[in-house]
Every structure is written in C-alpha cells, then in structure tokens.
Amino acid sequence: METPFELQVITEIRDAFGKAQKDGDTSVSKSLVKKWMASQSINVRGAIYYYVADGGYSKVIEPMMTFEDYFNFIVPYLLDCIKLDIDGEWVHNQYIAGHELVGWITDFWEKDIHKKRLKEFKKTLALNFKEGDKGIKDAIVNGVLEHLFEDSGIRKFFSDWREDPELKQAYEDAMLWNTKPGIKPI
Image 1 (cartoon, rainbow, N blue to C red):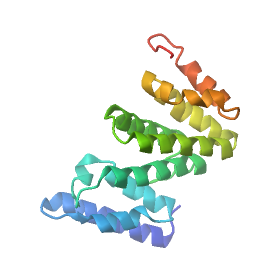
Image 2 (cartoon, helix red, strand yellow):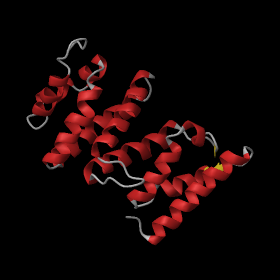
Image 3 (cartoon, rainbow, N blue to C red):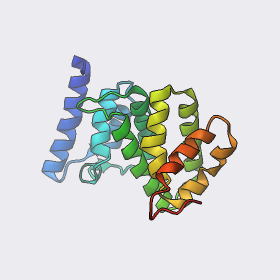
Image 4 (cartoon, rainbow, N blue to C red):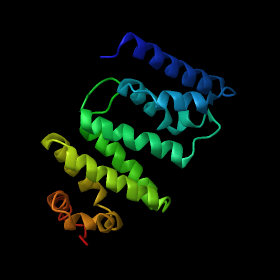
C-alpha cells in the first residue's frame, strides 16, 4: 500500500507522462525522471519503471535516456523487486521482475553492447543469490537464470558459476530447464 507521499509522486509521474503523450509537443524532463528513479520508495520506482520501460512513453523524455540511464535504474529496481517480493499496483513480484530482467538482459546481450556492464550484472546477481534466502535463490534460478540460459551465449557467459561452490548448484539447477527438446546445452 502506498503512503500519501508516494501517491502524490505517482500522480505527478502519471500526469507528466499522460500530458506529454497527449499533447505530442510536451516532453518530460530527464532530470525529473532521474529524480523519480532515485527514489527510495519501491512504489515510486515501480511507477517510473512503468513509463520508462514503455517505448510509447519513454520517447517523450528529453533529453533522451541513455543505456547507462536505463541500466543504472532497471537492474537495481528489478533486483529489489526480486528481494522484496511485493505484489502491488506498481511493484513487480519476484517472478514478474525476473521475467522483466530476462527481457532487458537478453536485449542488451543480443545488441552486443556494454559487455562490461553485463559482467557487473552477473556479479551483482551472484551477490544477490549468495545473500538471499531460499525464496530469493529460487526466484533467481527459476525466474531469471533458467530463462537467460535459453541463449547458449548467455549460458556460456555464466559458466564460471560452475567453479564457485555457492553458485554451482544454481547453475546446474537452471540448466535443468535447458534440457528440454530444442535447447542445446553448452
């Protein structure tokens, strides 16, 4: 449930993007978007995620968002959703967040951009797995890794997890999903 302050900010976000999209010649300031993205509130970040993740809305942000803007917001937000497992109006539950994360990471991977940032993502995901409880670990394996591993290049990219005693089982469990027909394990 959102606090009155969160509801006020979410209304501001909704109004700004709604007006910009309706008018066609109005934009939403990137500095304002980044202020909302930096919120400590998972509800506010969920609301701004809704708009920045939608191409129809994100195109009204000026100046345009960069890869770094997206990456620095989306990965931490979605990992927070996995850790918190809140199913709210604006906030993704663990598995929806995992699905969203897979989409973004796969897109970044396919575009072959910013491999250094993808290495940072892998390191951050490993840390979240190691520090997480059973629910978080299950969500990372079942909601993220299993689906990332459908791509043979990403499976190979994560293959070093087999050498880490804390990550080996996660890698092996995620690979079980990829023994289905049509998916070729590395």
